[in-house]
Each structure stands twice: as C-alpha cells, then as structure tokens.
Image (cartoon, rainbow, N blue to C red; front, top):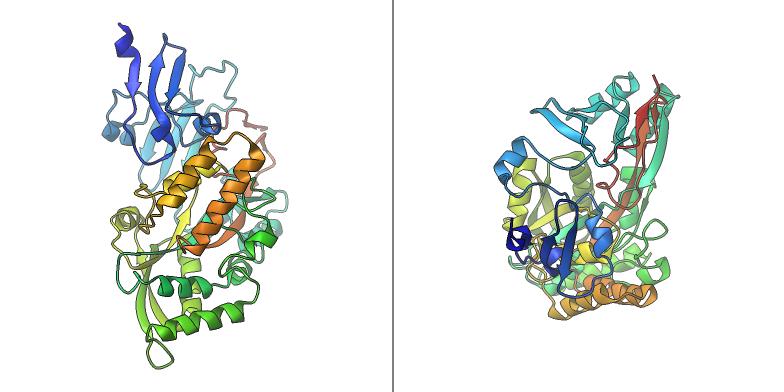
Length: 405
C-alpha cells in the first residue's frame, strides 16, 4: 500500500477539529496528526470520549446497528428499549484488561423503576442518581456506595434570535434578567449545584469565572428583585405590561433533566409579563428541531467532551457551529476564541476565556441557568469504578472495574 493510501483527510467543520489538516499513518500502530496551527488542548481533546476511533470503511448506518471500535469491550447485542450487551475484547491493546467478561446495560425509562431495581440489588451501578433520590438510596440500600459529583452538564435558555419578537436584544435581555438561578438549584437539586457561565465554575471547573467576577455579569447579581424590575422596564418599553402579556411556547426534550427546569423557567418568565406553555418534545425529534431552529424559546442541556474552552466555545458559540442552536454570531468573539485556543500560557488563556464569558453574557448568547449535581451509586461488590467531575463521557471505559463475588 503506497503512502497516499495511509492518509485521511478531515472535512473542515466549525468545531475544534477544524484545526486538523490531515492524519498520516505509518504502518498499523503509528499516526501523525498535522495541525493547521498550534492547539495546546489537542491531546486532551483527542483522549476524550468524544474522539472515538473506528474503521472509516464501515458505513454510518452499519455503525449505528453494529458498532466497531478499539475499546476494552466488543458489541454483542442491542435490544431496543430493553438492553445493550458488550463482551470483553480479547484483542484490546492492554493485554491484562479489562477484568470483566462483559457488561449488560438494562434500559429502564422510568427513573422510579430504575431506582427500585438498583435498591433491590438487580443492578451493580446506577448513574445519575438525583439528589432527592439519593435520600431513598441511603434509607433503603444503606450498604450502597454513593458519590456526589459535578458532571459539567449545564441547563441553559435558548432563544431563536431570528424569530420575531425575539430578534429584539431588549427582549432577550429582559428574559436573562428574569432568572433566579439559585431557585433552580434549591428546587431541583436541594441546593446541590453551582451557578456559572458557559464554562464549568470552580472548584470543579478549571476555567470558570470566580464568583466575584461572575456576579458582575448581567442577571447574575444576587438581587433578583432588582434584576426583574429592570426586566419589566425593558418589557414595558417594548409595549408589554400588566395588561399586555407576551404568549410564548417553551420547547424542551421530554425527559426529566430538561422538563423539570423548564417548568421553573416558565414560572420565572411570568414575573416579567411572559406567559409560556410547555412543549415537551420526544427525544428523537428534539435535536433535529433545535438544529433547524424550529422553536422560539427552549430549555436545553449542554454537555461537553472535557472541561476545556475549545469544545465549549467552538461547538456552541462561534458563528455557524453545529450546536449553536440560537444562531448567535459575533465575529469579534470568534477571534477571541481563536486567540485563547492558541495560547499556551495558562494564566493568559484564563483571562481570554473570562473575557469571552463576559461578552457571551452581555450578548445574552445562551444564558446558563445552573450546573446541577447528581450522584453515582454502586453495590459494594463493584470495585475500582471511576467517577469524573468534568464530563459524563470520560468514565465509561471500565477497563479497571471488577466484581468481588
């Protein structure tokens, strides 16, 4: 095979991997990534759960029904709405891993049924135990081991900036000023959560603004009453008021992590003359709906590959990005995003990241509502389970996990 057949060209897309010019292989075990410019975060991004390695000769359709990869487990079977089964990969590059012979993921849509199954000992681990559920686990399964974690998965307000009347900057600002972020945390996660901007807030997040800086951003000040008074003034200038409310529909994915905060959001918007009704959207339709901007107002959940500004900004906020669901576009912010991506000095990069966060807040690009906390619970027989704090995608290799039975 000649050298040309060892090259893979990457189609340019508006995401962090647009920086890859080509990948050249040297035999079966060596690859060289040729970048268009320096990118200090590249190795971290390459190591995340959002950078899978799979054969390019297998079609996307076949990969969806029978995925092929290089991980510690091999796909065995998928039963829709029942289970996913994987088995130990005997060809895994770590010869002594994994320890487990296989894993069965049981699909249980109802969270209460899922919890009861774990408490009864039918499951070894339960990911995403809510804080209210955690009390039930401690009471009914006292031997279970649970760890609360910050998953870096924020809830945010998305507004279609091209759809009247939401093309008004004043209206979007009023909506941002209406938010009581602490209430989301108190109601949904019993106080277990964090207020932050586009980046995961400290101490779990490396890049988020410190609280004293965050509080200077529009709508983040602790005086919610003052913020809402300013929001009502803006609404009144637009012709709304006690006798003239704005009717809107708030769309969101029809599962609890989306739906529950959307209900609270609707209640908060009422404080500034906005009467909203909930539009719960089936999961299969949610992402196509927001990507084609077939909505006016929505509540979204944003997750990321790792706590790094490159995937957070390039995927969600630069002009034309795939996950830029609101249509936000500020070329000056794009230039700042490129500058921070090039910067190798941690302190200088943080300053650039905080400037970007400030501008996103001032532009009401995609107001972050809150960062919830949840728990992972497992039976004592399960050993060496990893728990991540900066992504929900980087703890699922399970190569070191074993069962003591």
